[in-house]
Length: 133
Image 1 (spheres, helix red, strand yellow):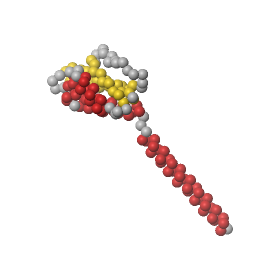
Image 2: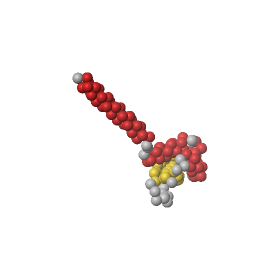
Image 3: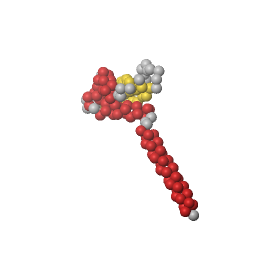
Image 4: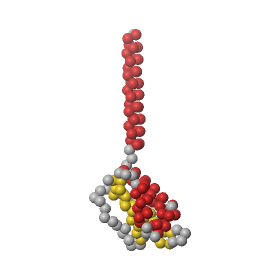
């Protein structure tokens, strides 16, 4: 009878150990999955931040309205991670396809329309193309 009790206790300990081990592995797996972000989502977030900063900064906004592409491109380059490349295009919002020659890679595109500031009304479309190097 005593051996029978010891066998049950060992069986319960073994089952508990398996459950604890499975729980630890499950937590580690889900934590690892949460850290991996889709490249498309990552690039989208970067592009939206760049375009939002351009829209909210008075100087950058004026540069878009006056077609000063150099300052906008410099700003985008500073805010793009080093393993990505970005190209900014400023174009007219009416009947302008806003196209450029792109590399043969997965290219992510976002755009924002900037219409005016306090002094200038010149609607423009700012499009950012981003791809992984």
